[in-house]
Amino acid sequence: MLEQAAHILSETSRVLWGVPLLVILGAAHVFLTFRLRFIQRHIGTAIKLSFLRAREGAGEISHFGALSVALAATIGTGNIVGVATAVALGGPGAVLWMWLTGVFGIATKYSEALLSIKYRVAETGGAVCGGPMYVLERGMNCRWLGIVFAVLTALAAFGIGNTVQANAISRLLLQTTGVSPWVTGAVLTAMTGVVILGGIRSLARACALLVPFMALFYMFACMVLLAMHIETVPQTIYLIVTSAFTGQAAVGGFAGAGMMQALRWGMARGLFSNESGLGSAPIVAAAAQTKNPVRQALISATGTFWDTVVVCALTGLVIVNSGAWTAGQGGDLLTKQAFGAIPVLGPFGLTIALFTFVFSTLLGWSYYGEKSIEYLLGSRAVKPYRWLWVGAVFAGSVSQMQMVWDFADIANALMAVPNIISLFVLSPVIVAETRKYLWEGRLEESGE
Image 1 (cartoon, rainbow, N blue to C red):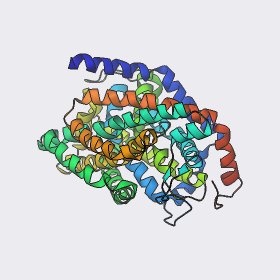
Image 2 (image 1 turned 135 degrees about the vertical axis):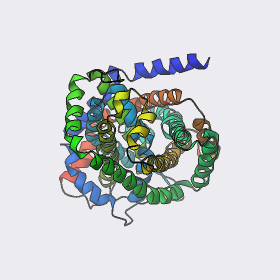
Image 3 (image 1 turned 60 degrees about the vertical axis):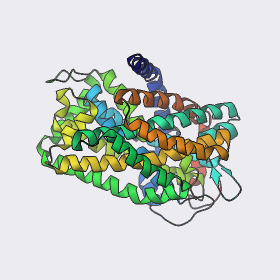
Image 4 (image 1 turned 30 degrees about the vertical axis):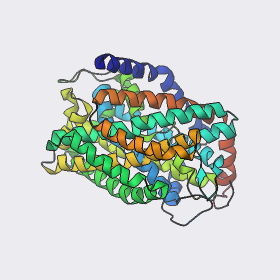
């Protein structure tokens, strides 16, 4: 029965992540990039804005807090195990497709955040609610599609933001330290429960402290690994670029992968990591204090830049440069072998990095799922959902790896569809807001 269920999930994931969805997502990234005159060129301005701590306009948390929660949710196992899985299944070329997905995805992340802030609603007591479900309801007058998105998000949260994360760290701890997944699950469950009961402000405070540390720590470890084998880095970059378009022939225990495999796994894991097009990050962007939608949209777009253009690219370089990918191993073992190049400190550093990534992602995605449930059932359903969320952390820690990944991929694919529809339909609104505040130099003006 379990094997049959695993097969069904695997086949469903394969079909959903076939050519049609990849074309739709790729088209959205490219379309919005050109429609917005390459909004990526403003990434420097966006990064500067993200470090400003002053209160701006209505909202529950600072824009830095909103970015921290979004980064906490996006920088997770997708940046480590997900990248390794893409290389294992798609070859070195998958790294380039993942990177390009991030570069063009900046425009998509900007667009969905802008719409979510523009169409957010204020509640009594100062709380604000936003996200694609409100965009679909208020911007497109399609409440039924908003309900579909909210249902899919609430379900997807248990895959991409919960069970996958818990599963990855429990397996790694078992392999590196021998700690039972039951012990890891119990500890992680307790830590998650303590933080999420405090609500969005508690999440923002925790993520603002955790995210900078974990990102810098991990990037430093990657730089050390690359410096240790700096002589092969140019050759590695050449291999990544060429195999992205020609495929990779069999090497050692590696079965080899064609261009379509590299494209499929690179884009799939790129989206899994940075979430551009899913519509998840805009849910927390809508809670930010901002003068106008464009300012926070720019800040939100830096999440994709840091997540994929920087962190995932570093991971991909480390994995391919290590040569471990030729052994035909799975993503988690591949990552462990690559970081094992640094005796003792390598596996330990990987464990610390992955644990902090997992914990932060659990916190960030709990908010996405919570706001989706609140949209569907009202505030009375939030507390039961939080308890269900905490329980799922433990369940994910002791689950079968491949089934968890397949479930996450399926949920991601379904969740992206209604959000992408809103981005195409409301692209004139995105352009109008961008022209008003960014292109005309009125970024400091207030108004939503």
